[in-house]
Amino acid sequence: MSLLLATLIPGLILLLVGFPLFLGSATVASTYRAFPRSQTASYLFFGGGTLWFLYQVWNLSAADFGDYHVALTVGFAAIALFAFKCVPDFLAVRGLAIVVLLGSFPLLMAGYLRFDHPQIYFQKVLLFIPVTLAIWLGAQPWRLRDFFEWLFARRERSRWVGGVVAGYGLLLTVLAFTY
Image (cartoon, rainbow, N blue to C red; front, side, top):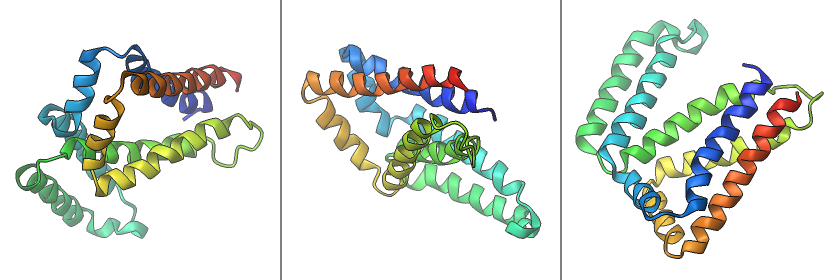
């Protein structure tokens, strides 16, 4: 992946997440509040994250348990199916955590040992924040619901957070074209 794409993708995602927050409509607030327990979001994020993870497991090399990739794939697929049945609460948050963790790797590797472009650190610092949050929210997904309750308790909070997120997204989008 090129540095342009590795910086542009997170920038556009931040703009897509932050700008609606900055506008602060009631529809956006209700959508964000419904996300953690949304069945549609669960199928999209957890299902998509599961398929992506199973693809990674299926393509393991021999050094990474590749000789057992069939058994691992079947086992992890069974766990994912049982997750839909046995623990459906906050599955969208866990799925988002999976997608963030898997998606961050190629974005971070695009700038690996690229010391000739110091502006890549704006992208790397940004990516380590959601990776940390994904690990934390994967273990405690109800914290996202609590955060949304806090965020939308006062309209100024969502506007301020949305402005910061959209502003950083704009910065990354502009920096993407400086490589």
